[in-house]
Each structure stands twice: as C-alpha cells, then as structure tokens.
Amino acid sequence: MIEESPRDPANGPADIESAGDDAIQASQVESAAPAQYRGAASDPIFGFMIAAALSVGLSPLLPDNADLRYTLAWGALSGVSILSWLLGNMERIGEESPENIGWGLLYGLLLGIPFMVFLRQSILEPATAQMFPGMTAGSLLAFLVFVMPISETLFFRGLLQKQLPFWIVGVLATLWNVVLFFPVMWQTVIRLHAVTAVIVIILLLMNMVFVYVRERNGLAAAWVCQIVANLVILYVPFL
Image 1 (cartoon, rainbow, N blue to C red):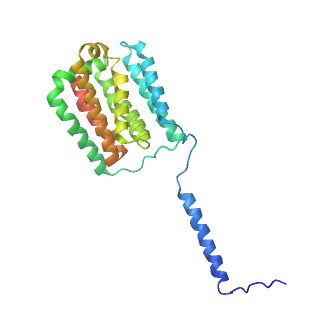
Image 2: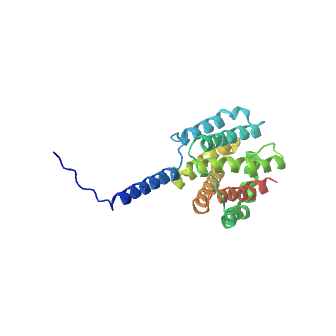
Image 3: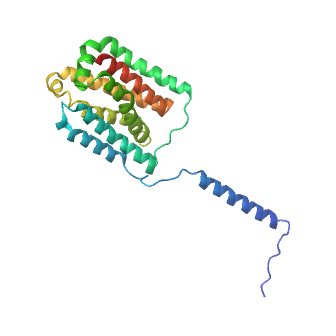
C-alpha cells in the first residue's frame, strides 16, 4: 500500500493564492500585447511598387492633366497607408506635444530658407513652373499643404519607417519624387543634367530631414516639417 505524502495545511492556501496571482499576471501581459490585425504580414514595398507603377502608367495624361495624375498617384499612396492602418499593424497616431510640433516647424524653416536664398531664381522658380504646369496658386497650395504631405507622411514616415532604417526610407521617398515629378519636366531632365542633379539633391535632403524629424520628434512633427518645407521651397518660388 502506497502511503501519501503528508500535506502541509499551512502551505495549501498560499500555493493556491500564488497560482491565482500568476494567472492574473499572465492574462494582463496577453491583454497588453499589441493586437495583430489582418494583413500585418503584408509587405509595404509592394504597395510602393503599385503606386510608382501607377504614376508611370499615368504619364500619357501629361502635360495637360498633371494635376489629375498627381491626385491619383498620391491617392494610391494614401490608400495603401489607410488600408495598412485599418487592416494591418501600422502605428496609431498618438497625442503630440506642442514642443515636437515646434521642432517640426523649425526644421522646415531651416531646411527651406537656404534653398530660397541661394537657388530661388536659378533652380526653384523654373523647376516649380515645370513641375506644376497649368495649376493655379490655390490648387497648388491644396496639393502642397494637404494632399502631398498627408500621403507621403503616412506612407513613408508612418508605414515604412517602422520597418526599415530611416536612411532607406529617405532614399525610397526620393525615388518616389523622381518617378512622380520627372516625367512632368522631362525636357529639362534630358537637356540640363546639372539642374536635374541639383533637383535630385534637394529632394534627397528634404526627405532625409523629414525622416530624421520623424525619428526625433514623431510623426506629426514630420508632417508639419514637410508642409513648411513645401511652402518655402516649392510654393513661394511658384508664385
């Protein structure tokens, strides 16, 4: 006959209480873990390729319907970002501090003013006239303040920068700008190689500053930075 080991009545309730605490802690950890939504494993690079291919495919609309091409291309970029936000695991936008917003404003001015001082007449004024042919000042203001910053901030700084190093995101954003803008100003691209190189450098510096501000001060600050830079570098020379 097997004898049962004697139980210590003093330890019984303590063991039960300890096990209950462990179960509660485990449930709290599970509930605190970020939810994984449908499409969390999707590759945002695929969305980038679709938007870039759409931009190239809409080139026959040029030059008469450049604004329609911009709207559809930036709209595709926004659509990928919104789908990722709704169905994927894109980072949610939280409450931003006024200090971070101020830093975004400051970086936008520091980025744009030197270009305005040294390159306005030689590069920026002729380039913006060719980038946005036939647009009124009001329609271009809407593009540069709302359409372009929202779509590019959500996709590159919101979606891609969570998964890729910031410098790669800056290069991809510059590639997107090249695919978007250069077909509109193709005659300048093929004739004036030095001007084209300067424009590429300006776009690269802009995007590198945007991803840096995103890394340092958050998504809203990067959005404000792009709005300010767009106004100084692209809108004012267009007027």
